[in-house]
Length: 402
Ligand code: PLP
Image (cartoon, rainbow, N blue to C red; front, top):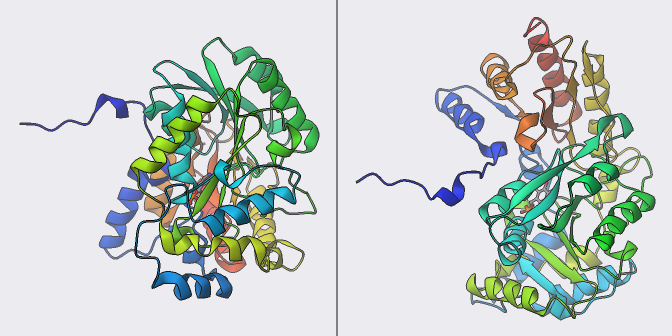
C-alpha cells in the first residue's frame, strides 16, 4: 500500500529547508564544501553562546529532567513579564507560554485560532513559517505587500483592501525577516489601527527586536495598542545566539475578556505537548536580565554591523542588483533587476548558483514574494567570507539569464 501525505500539507511549504538544501546535502556527501547562507543559525558561523546562559543551563540541567509546567517555568515567565513591563506592556505570568522555539508557538497560535477558510493577513515577503502555519491550520494566508520603494514598509492601503469578513488576524514581523525593515511607531499605529477597525488579533513576531543597526529603536506592537489582543513572539535563538536550545515565548497581551475560548485553546495545545524543553527555560531569566552582549555585535565596531555593511556594499556593487539596507535582523534581500536578469524560476536560479559556486541562498518566492526577482542571504559569516561569497555570487550572475 502506498502511504501518501495528508492533504493538510497540500499548501504547506518551507523552502528555507526545501529541495535546495537536499541538493546541498547531496553535494556535501559527494565531498564538496557548501557555504550555507540559507538559515539564520548564528552558532555555525562562530557566534558563541553567552557564557552566563551556558552556565545556567548546565547548573540546572541535573534538575531539569522531569516534565515541567505546560506554560513554562515560573521564573522564566516572570522574567518575560518583567521584560515587557520595562517596555510599557502589562501582562501577568498566566499570559506567557514558553515553547520549543517561537516556531512551535506560531503553529499553536494558528491551530487554536483558525477554522477552514479563515484568513490571516501575512506580509509579503514573509518568514514562510507564518504562511505554512496558517495553511496547516486550515486557513488561507492573504499576503499584503511590503513596499521595497519605501524601505519595505507595509502598504497599509493594500492591507485594508485585503480584509474580508473571514479575516481573523494580522501578522507583523518586526524587525522583518527577510527584508531587515524595522517599523517606527507611526507605522505600528497604522497597522494596529487596521486591526482595531476590523477586530483582528495581532500576531507580532519580534524575534529580532534586539538586532538593530544605525541607532534605530524597536517598540513592541503591544505597547502601541494595549487595547488590542496581541500575541507577541520572541525567544533566545537570535539575540542570544542559542537557536539549538529551542527556547521561545509567546505573550498574550491586551484585553482577554472576549478571548477566553481562544486562550483555553492555546492552553489545551500547550498541555498536549506537555512542556517545552526544560533545561533551556532555566536560561531565560538570565538572558533577559543579564548583560546584553548582542549590543557588542550590533553597535559601531560590532561584528554583525560590519557584516551587514559588507553584504550591502558588495551586493549593490553587482550590476543590476539593488538592496534596501537592512536596519535589523540577520539578512539581506537583494533585488535582481528583471531588465538585466531574465529569471523565470528563481528556485532554479539558486539551484544553479549552488551547483556552480557551492553557495546556498534562498529564492525570494520561498518567502511568498510574488516575483522571481529576489533572493535572501544571511549576513552571519565573517566579513571576509561574506565578501568572498558575494563576489562569487556576482561572478555567477554575470552572464546568468541575461
Ligand atoms: N520568526 C522569525 C521571523 C524567524 O526568522 C525565525 C527563525 O529564523 C523564527 C520565528 C523561529 O525561531 P525559533 O528558533 O525561536 O523557532
